[in-house]
Structures are given as structure tokens and as C-alpha cells.
Length: 204
Image (cartoon, rainbow, N blue to C red; front, side, top):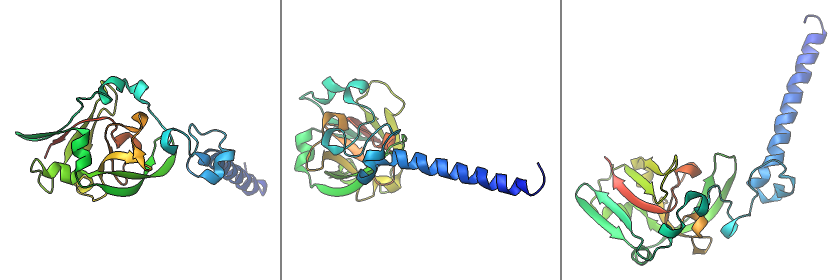
């Protein structure tokens, strides 16, 4: 279309697109910001909901890990070549504990910060002589799933706030949040913050 009307119509179209985008953000942001929760019309999660005031993307029931995660004989296997250690939850709790405020950012679009407590991952790996530049493979108790196995490069492994988390917001992890132990690291998507840990293996 030509003439004076074309720029006006184009501008009106762009304004409409921008307004729609802002409205969508406004109607989903309640899953990340408590003051917008009343307007959370289309988001799959809402801020402050779920066990320990944290949303849950995948429950223990959906992951089929309940029996394994609550078994009294649960141990976290940590391996570096031929060197291996196994840690029960009490052994992890007896190690020096670190606290960190870190977000969970989900691919569904929500993000919520929480107060985590646990053992620094690098200290767990030091027990099997892992190198400073080591990357790791992390495996969940989940019997299947796209993110049952994840990989973590060395820059995350050695970060002081990357934890084998045992508690969140002042209480032991809820089963849906990864009990008996999970990974929490800065700047990683929620799907890579492995819950229900089974093993951690040095791969380089």
C-alpha cells in the first residue's frame, strides 16, 4: 500500500504488537514477582506457590523417584576414574555447609530466588582428587527423562555457590524439590539443576 496512510498503519501495527507483548508479560510475570501475582492469568506457575514457597516443574511422583529418594540406604556416588566415594545424607550434613541465595529459572518462563544450604560441589569432588579444571556428569535417580543426565563445565563446578543442596528456605529439601540432595548452581536453567542426585562423575 502506498500514500500517507501506509506509515500510519505501520506505526499502528507496531504499537499494537508492542501493547500485546507488554500485556502478555504482565499477565505471566506473577510467577516471578509476588506483587504481580494477582494478574497472573496465563502463566503455568504462581510466585510463592508449591512446597517451601517454590514452584515445582516436575514432581517426585512424575519422576517416579519416591521410593529411591526416601530409601534409608540412599548414597551419592562420586567418582573420578578409579577413585570413588559414597556419601549418605548424614555424611553430607556433617561436612562444612555453605549458604547461597540463588534463583531457579525455568524454561516455562518463571524465575524465583531461594535461600539454599548444602556442601560446595568442589569440596565433594576434592574427596576423589578431581582436578581444578574438571567437568562432571551428573545423574539423577530418575529412571528416565530428557534431563536425567546433565553435564556441568568446570567454571560452574568450581564456583563457590554451586552446591550439593540439602536444604532450602531454612528447611530440609522437600521431596518435590530434590530430597535427599540436588544440584544448585548460579546461571544455569532449572532443567540443569539436577534433583534427586544419584551420582557425580568426573569426565575431564
